[in-house]
Length: 168
Image 1 (cartoon, helix red, strand yellow):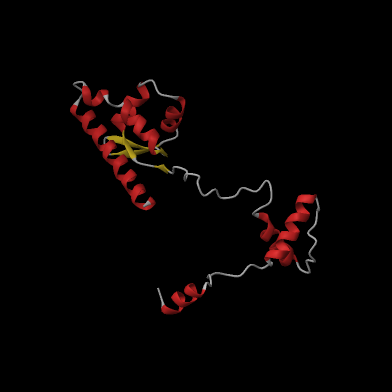
Image 2: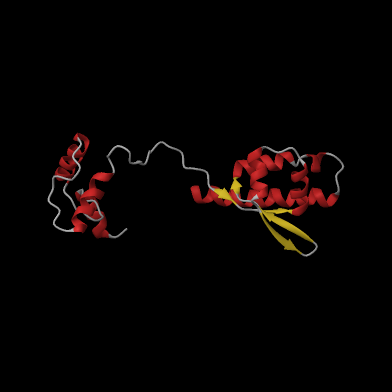
C-alpha cells in the first residue's frame, strides 16, 4: 500500500467515488417513496439526474433484493468430464429426477472408441453420482469400469479443490 493511501486511511478518508446524490436528499426521497409518492421530490433537470436519484434510493427500498452479509454464497456448478462407462452405468441405475436431468443435459464428446459426458452440476450432485457408482468398485467389476470411476472421482476432486482455493 502506498504512503498516501495509508495517510488518507489514518485520517479517516475512504476511497471511491462520492455518491451522486447527498445522503440527506436520499433519505427524503426514500421517505417520500415509502409514503407512496410516484415521482421523486427532487427536481431532475436531466434524464441522467433522474437515474442517479433512482439509483441512490434503490438499495433500501422494499422489493429490492439486498445483499445479506450472513447468507452463504450459492454453490457454483462444476463441469467435469464423466467417462462413458460411468455414464452408461448411471443411466441404467435408479437415479433421482435431478440427477437424471443432469445426465440428460450433459454434452457428449466423442473420444476415440468411447465418449465422455460433460455434466454440469453442483459438487454435491457429482458426489451423489459417485456414491451411486460404488458397485463398480466394491464388486468384481470390469477393471476398465473401476478405472473410469476413479478417473471421474479424480476430475471431481480436482475441480472441487480449485473451487476451495478460490473461496479462500
